[in-house]
Length: 389
Image (cartoon, rainbow, N blue to C red; front, side):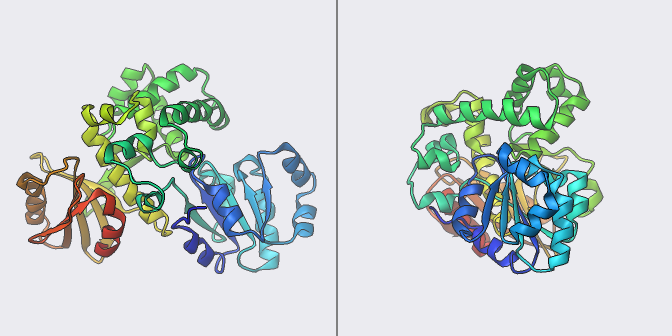
């Protein structure tokens, strides 16, 4: 098993909270991580009907008999269990009693969040990051974008054009029907493809809804569904005034570039290199890596973008607190040019009241210091970000 960055954080939280939750997309490695990192915990898969039936027939009796140190995998399949976990965990009053794992953000469920409020530490496991993947692979940037980062693809040596169509079909037929009563799956599939074509763009809900042939409110609901299932995420614009962040349009990204490539029908690295969306795919990869880095350290992502009315834009702003920001320009080129510096310098002038660390992430291989700006190769992103944050 390839060590996952989040393991140490979960071990620490188990000493502080009675309940730990671990959510993330399907096939991101949650079950493998939990069963290998916590071999002394009893394991129940709540996708299995026999496990669900055994537990729900007498939940209090089951929890009292089973004791503590239990993993409930795919826990969203038995939401009735959560209120009983609250009662029993309060009675025992010890840390590390239960680990709840699932492929959707089941804690968004009102009943669950109320039952476990103040008792659960929330964690998200995404597919491999560059550092984890680097332990087993040495790939070009184009092949990395095409492959994505799902563990099974590497563990079983599955070609991306075999893995992702089946993965997406399973998601659409199984999870979508479970989470939302969507009758026309063909329309939803078309909507998903249209989202892939908009990565890195400011979200225009009306345009997206019109192109998909659905109402704007339906588009909003489907985007929320994709977010809850860890398929897409939205990056908000940065403002000093927090309220303004909530009323401006976000940018749309996918958690994994392999999913995007499959939706765009890209099947080899040459197609990735020459595609008109290559720059957006590279940007998507970098920002997803930053999200993974923060999630896998148990932090809530603080990632934004910056855009002024005059067209000046910074691809990624990371809020560090104490009036400190990190500003990143993301460039898919493999050779550095002075044009990469322009927006970062203009951003410095606009933000004179805060301290800004500045960096360029590009598809080349050389690290460098350019005055006050750090040049970071994509393959060293995680280690360099660790030093700068």
